Image (tube, rainbow, N blue to C red; front, side, top):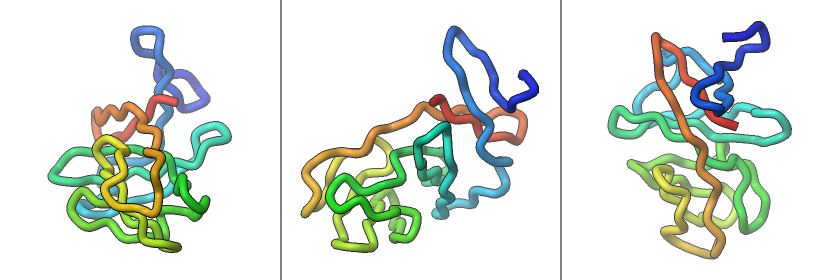
Length: 112
């Protein structure tokens, strides 16, 4: 790990985003990775990371609801699958970008 809080793995840069115990089951947090807003959530024991801004109306998704694997936008209730960013329910028609996540030694790292 370098002093900036990043980890170099196989030519990919991961950024430390949170201690593992700060993202409880069924909860989400918002983090910044560079200029990107990212939502990090734990569902069924696995940590996932997707764009934090709705592709439909550009609302902050961390203000929405997470039910099982469905992330609901607080503005128009578009639903995205937190596991793969796909649209489950409109009005959104563009998926969210998905970020690679690594959980290691009590820390959550996101590639970005």
